[in-house]
Length: 117
Length: 116
Image 1 (cartoon, chains in turn cyan, brown):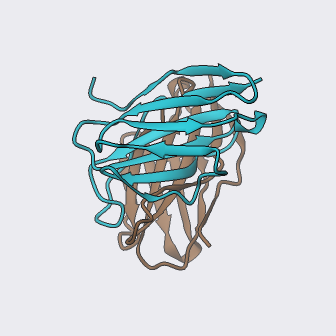
Image 2: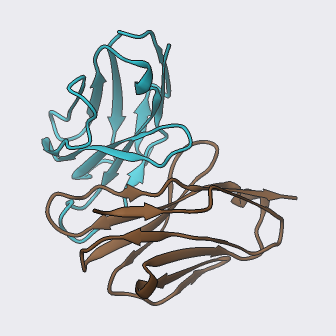
């Protein structure tokens, strides 16, 4: 497909488990973003990659959250020792442009709904 | 600090009514970009429009129109003759220019319900 894809679409984890969420951006897109969307709220920025470089991780809520994009394409968001407050939809977005340059719209994936029980 | 406020949490209208969704933003930057996204029940955010801070021309696209006013820091969105398919959560977002700040700053969204 031509869009951003994310997997799994739904994930239920027991408190304390580790989870890994995958994002496949649109081919050739340089920029990749992760957002967290709590129920009834707008998405909140977590981290930004330019190719394989993680240029901004200021939004990661704790050191339990870790993201990587080793080959500048697929990205994985990992959450260690999940807590109930981690329950949210995790959205991935990609953009053909650079963060600081002429701006392009971000194309969003369908999200992964994480429920921590 | 940058902030986007969507004061209307939920709006309910009857089909064919016009509806305006409000968006007020805060930033001290002179160059920035404003966006509207639609999030239907399926969850995927759908891009609707982008405006840059130097272009205050209003825009119309079919039943959709946007009113950007820098003097009041507002970027309001109007749907004319609403349809049931317009039911969704609508987000206004702000992006700054330059540096590594490529992320979007979203409002909390307005849930629009259009009833037949």
